Length: 356
Image 1 (cartoon, rainbow, N blue to C red):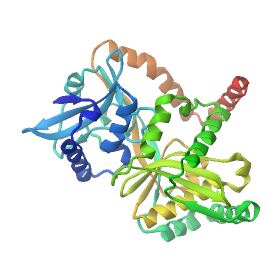
Image 2 (image 1 turned 135 degrees about the horizontal axis):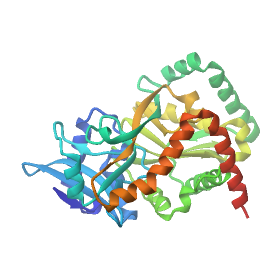
Image 3 (image 1 turned 90 degrees about the horizontal axis):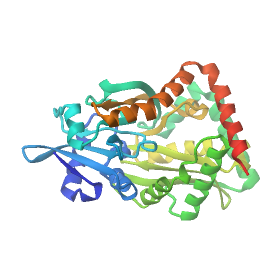
Image 4 (image 1 turned 90 degrees about the vertical axis):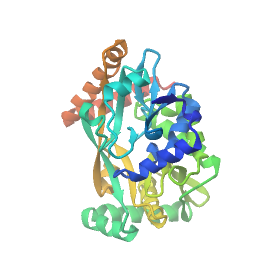
């Protein structure tokens, strides 16, 4: 086994990584491609890739980050929506030995891909990630919506027409290259985080830089994609995510609150589904975490896992102290839905107090 920084991966190793992903049964999520790991490595000096060998041939890759005290975590933990190792069929390394080879005492994950037999046994929780299936085309998806959510679809399309009458002709760009549109999205999303009492991800320099790098990434299996809904010449909703040839990983959606009554975010997602289907993409992955808009748009769910593999050491103890109490508190709220609304009110109240 060798441990490298992502930028040290040669093109041959990256191509082998892509070959192994193509052999996997899991959806071709772009977060699991080498391009995402390389982009994280550009903004996170602690990023590493363990390369496993079998008869001098790469047989597996584990992208991860190493903390100052030896704690390990999935690459891009906190923003990556699909995590795990990329292994050749039949490869079965022992988890503890792999951690030792990586010089880490733990490997934490919060969106572990289903089917990751190496790490799933160590998961503490299973979560649902919500997906839109457009494999059979957008018209088929619309017919599903008409059956399961007829009022939702009718109302959303009516709002789209009203938006056009109010603010100008509605148009959609699936792969917008105008940096001004990305800046608008970041501004809306930061305001949303603050408004709802959540930590502004874009206030963290490495995340802002990562999105900037991925916006310039153009690869068959990992392309940064900015989708924008315009009314007239004005952007009213936007989304930045990553796409492969078969999966659009939804990541950062937001909209201009001035147009909130027209539900531009919902209109945007419908147009994204339509455009993705036209591109031959079969699935939109909206990520984990319950949300009313996901319930309205989804056609199904996939499992992802949260937890950590540990081996004895100071780093493992630090992992437990830093993550387990918070994880258990979140789990308690999820297990008691009546607490969700009060918790949300507390977050919004804290946000108001922090405002100047």
